Length: 584
Ligand code: ADP
Ligand code: MG
Image 1 (cartoon, rainbow, N blue to C red):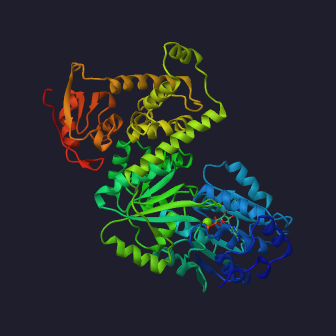
Image 2 (cartoon, rainbow, N blue to C red):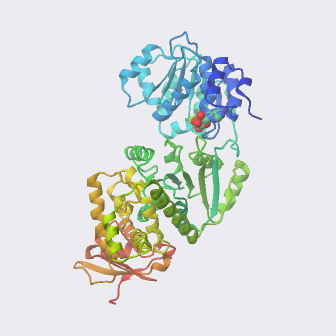
Image 3 (tube, helix red, strand yellow):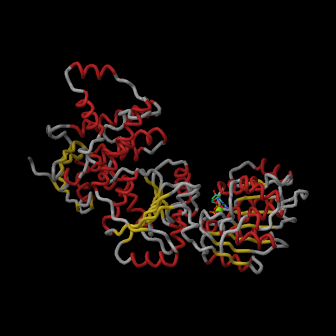
């Protein structure tokens, strides 16, 4: 069925004007199919993917049905989070902007009761709320539903995932009477069926299959990978594209935990979400993610459902989702609002058949690509660094540092050599390890925008040479800056020591069977040690990277632990051996 124009849906002039003003040209598939029966008074169950326009599918007929002269609640929308309540309320307001006397108001936990009481008393006709707070007002008697015409459950699947089942049931049983009930959801777990059976009358079922057209604009790629190299490939793809904000989906809690350790050890700013994490902690992680307090969220499907973000740069299916529906749900979190998002899916072994089935039945528009090689990654990093440098030069936003420059020139150094040396120090050159290049190129923005935990500072922010490099404006507080500078000096001394000048007391030297040839950097090694052996970075002393091995000084107390925790893990594609170094 092709999409209809809004003017073909039997809507009033006021609504058509509003929709036009909102810039909607034609109704989306779910809107085309759902609006007429809702206007006709049917109960419906509407199933379509995230981003397909479900809000307007119920908001348009809702506003249409409100009687502006009646100052009582006529439409009640339940939705999972306060952000969504606000969003839906705003959409209702836009749709009713030409229909005088119609008012919508969001109510949710955390907002003052005072404002909610007065809004309810003033006679708003459309209430959008989270289940708990709605129930609360019903029980207090401040929300009365005698004039209710329409009850909507928006994102029903997410509300159930978030544990609102009982609240929803209570609200539904208190609204029994003459009104329509509409269920909207991206997926249809069994629990919803149960609610529908009990609370909807002869519902019309509307299901819009996810097709290439109504999935938001997401560039979808899959890689066939060896299970053991997934972490490596994940980080390569992140580095190559310079991604800073995304979700990595795993199939199990254990996978989430493992990947979180690996990514942290590699210096990425990550947090995890899964069913075993306490509600308090989950809420904290979600809030932090929403305000971009870290880069990548590693999560299981269920844990990520309650999360309200749709402006991700990228979604990784580190493990294949169960079915096409979950796949669509996952990738729907990127590529919203007209921007194109990216989704990468890893398949290993027999998973390929499962993906092929999903592609066939779910009409998924995904293409296969070859895993990016290390060379490609390096080239991309170099380009990023180059761009950043060029932008800084063009913008002219840097201190001139004339004294240092003059002194160097006076002593007879060539300006090109000075620049080359600087690039070497900050690690932006193609000869330097890729991690260094990455950190140099990424440092300034990360630093100025966010407020990371100390653990993360150690793993990524304080890599050598990146903190005080001043490639771009750095708006940190002075104490933070001090911390970084101290840290950076400390690490710098540690890393830049030209030869081994003898062991510090209290330290012992370990041999790692991995070196420059595998593109390992001191930061990688410190990251791995602090991440996996769970010892502070200060327990690591001097590090010498040789062609095929590295010598790493660690404090006596952690010596054995580092050996046992790191032996056998994979690092840069090698299986690591860590042993006591022979005297040179
Ligand atoms: P869903 O609830 O299905 O996840 P939304 O209702 O949040 O999707 O809509 C996703 C985006 O699409 C919003 O930015 C919305 O403004 C936009 N949108 C909805 N309907 C249309 C339409 N008919 N034409 C253009 N954009 C639309
Ligand atoms: Mg929605």
